[in-house]
Length: 165
Image 1: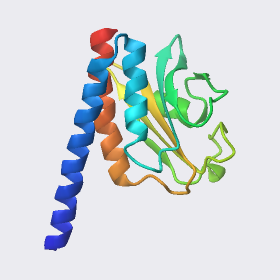
Image 2 (image 1 turned 90 degrees about the vertical axis):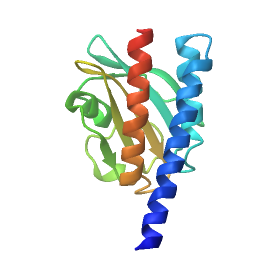
Image 3 (image 1 turned 180 degrees about the horizontal axis):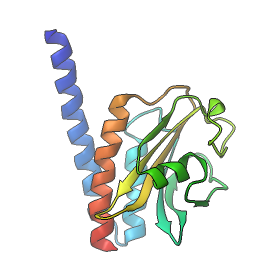
């Protein structure tokens, strides 16, 4: 029991440090776009399972890819709300963790190497303003810890996005 508590405390300390790094990246960019790019680059380094990291913003009923980092670009730079895992997460306002993309009919393939995906909405004051989309080349790469961490990261982004609107 004591070891479990110690592990949980260690994870929480690490999570807080990672969130602080993410907050700092948003302060260093010379433009909003540069800050978001720094954010996705820093987020990708948090976990080796994060193969591709992107931020989509809601614009005119669509999700528009704003910043990303990974081995290659995705063809899905614009996704209608409600379409795919990303569109579903933005429409529902819920985090979606897909352990095996081959078993989820909502999945829009970006890369043949992707095995799992997590999408976390960025909730503004009154509605979803964007989302964090992360792919992994491993099946079931994302845990409940990833969900909680990324939900906290999305709150950091929401504050930044609403401030820089």
